[in-house]
Image (tube, rainbow, N blue to C red):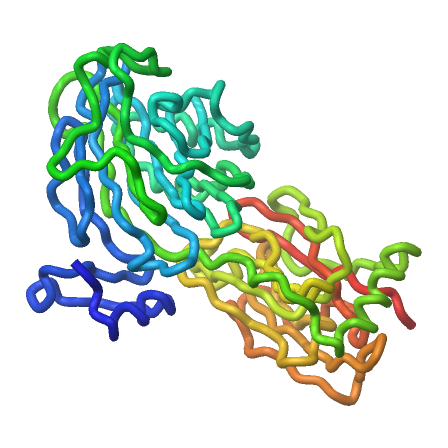
Amino acid sequence: MRIRAKYRQAIYSGAVLTFLLAAWSSGPVAYADGVLISPRINAKQMPQDFRVEAMKFTGPAGDGRRGSAGFVLQSREFVKDAGTKLSFAFERDVTGYGVQIIHPLAAGHVVVSIHSRGVTVHRGGPWGSIGWGDPATSDKVELNNGIDDVIKLQPGEPHQISSALSPDGSYELSINEKTICRHKVDGAKPLVLEVPRKHSVWGGSGWDRTQFTGDGFEPVLQAGHVGVILGPMDGSGLKQNVQNITLEPVPGPVPATQAPDKFLPLLRAVDQAREFKKLVRSRTAGGGGGGSFEPGLSKPSLLIGLEYTTSTFYGGHLTVKSVRPIYMTPDGEELGVWRGVPHGKVRRVRADDGYVVTAMVARHGHRVDGLRLLFMRVRGDRLNPDDTHRSEWIGGRGGGGERLFGAYGNPVVDIFGRTGHDVDAFGFVQVERK
């Protein structure tokens, strides 16, 4: 089932769409947070209710438990060449294993296993070598502090899971809006959903009797395949499930090329300032929550904008929830690391061509309520104070009055601050100039 062309572009652009099922019952439904794949999948049942074309199956047993089930589908129809983000609510039975998520990466696949004992990340290959999350064959994944209560996946409670993999292999997992881990995956093999007969698999049992199976099932996954495998459980009933599974694109870093010539003298000045420790930090907008974060790039850079999301969760008023720097580097335009967990629509604010960030005006309290960026044109190895413009206001109008952050007239090279689930505070690193 294919999305009609005029709707497909709207989905890629992140527009908020609402379709009446009565008028379009055979096609996928698009929400602000992505395309709905299925409203519910239960353990102990062959998956049935899908809004897009998918290959459905039941899967192997695990330590005496049975009833695993899942699906894969071709993501490229919905995300083109972008990465993939799967979001859903997972409810675990007290006897149940967790859930596995399949992301495409180039011609291969990444399998993320989430269970009450932790998280593992596997770079494709035979599923028999992965099992229900063998830590011995997993990448080494460092989990964030303060997430012990979340990762236990208490049975009978819905856990909102968001799993995102960008085209360059940057992975991020959040549960109940808490960042569990970030990890970089360097390549992956195609996934084969098959278990050799009488083969010992981590977390499994009864391998001579249970396999992946379903109508039209093909074990060797194709490039672009994305999916979910719901783990098995004891007993009966619909006590282990995933609900409201959605898929949305994850943009990747802008391909590295080369910075336009107009930026090169200033980038050389930034490189010298780094070498001779002539970089200074502004005060920060925001509060004292979260943990500190440092600048993210190890090469000369100029800040030219931000990607961001907003939220009304904190105190009921609009705040800036997360930010990601947009840099100009000697290799061209690049995206930095998210500070705070992005949720909802990702927006972008960027300097006009030939301009860079020099400061910001912001309102803040315990969070960054709202801000606007101030831009100045590049002139040789410095900025031209007679040629400026500013961004629209982003975020809310709460907090205190508007204040200036940064030395106006000096180029900003990166950001620093404090972050947890939200970006609690951030300021600028700038070239020190009088």
